[in-house]
Length: 402
Ligand code: ACO
Image (cartoon, rainbow, N blue to C red):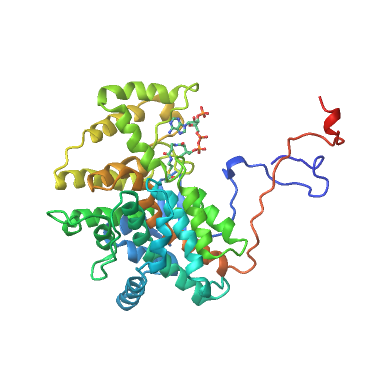
């Protein structure tokens, strides 16, 4: 806490906390993290239990409503979601304006923002029914829009959502041409994708969720708020890390090059970092990484994939975990270290990895946006700054400037 009263006579004290490492911006009852113990809970339920026993849609319900649904409540929620999976036909035309090789995240952010142009009649942020409808629409349409982003980027026609399929299989069906043995029919594929969606569904006040809340605090509509979250997620220090991990593993190429990579990551004159390592909050281990690691092996085994990148990943993990630099700084593999290898094995293209993350995180983003609107006395987010610029000086005409 720095006393900057001499600089800001009117405001007295406030904290200077670059990167918000120790500032709580809000109270929230959604997700709990204990970074030292490696604990993550959604609404009080340990992530390990949800990963083992639950499904993404059930978790989405839990995040939104605070309680696990009974059979009837879940059937109603699933029905609502299924009812809203279609994109508006005009939104299909919207895609035609994108450059053919646009990054799917660019198209996703723009397409989600455009939802407020399609559903502007139900955008009263103070109306609980409108808020709920927006949540349903977003969770339902996200896979449809995501698959459209991918198919547009490779020049394939869009596929309509097949509503007799469940959430993840519906997405897989929209993504891919029917292969000889449809991916959506392989239980391990659906299970792995569902698990990844559960693990990525929420993570309290991370950069993208804080962005959603900051934008939401202005009274902006839910689609605009979530679109802002998507753009924040895209960065390689956040959700973009899963794409960056795979590119890094490919760049390293073989296990014998791991040592050089670790050396480079420690060199402060080199910008290279081990992507998928480190976390602002987890200083012990990322509990999601443990679960994903196990699933990664299962997926590769069951699909009969022999991916040499897994050998590189294992060697890298081993090397970093016994290296003083990484141990001292508590840099452990995070959730994104293994997710890329799974996505690759499932046939999801690299540039879609962060889109996959966005599909899942939509549940958390909209739960936070709703919580914010249901909390009495919520204020507009307005961080301050520590001014380090010039003192007062007088304007000099251009002809007199040096
Ligand atoms: N490789 C090498 N060194 C690292 C790494 C890394 N991946 N991560 C942190 N460090 C070092 C820093 O250089 C710094 O060293 P120093 O104390 O000698 O200056 C120290 O560890 C602390 O790092 P910060 O950047 O201050 O930690 P911060 O909490 O701000 O950043 C972050 C966390 C962004 C996750 C960082 O660890 C990182 O860039 N990791 C790689 C990207 C990544 O995997 N992101 C995904 C995060 S999880 C998610 O969003 C789902």
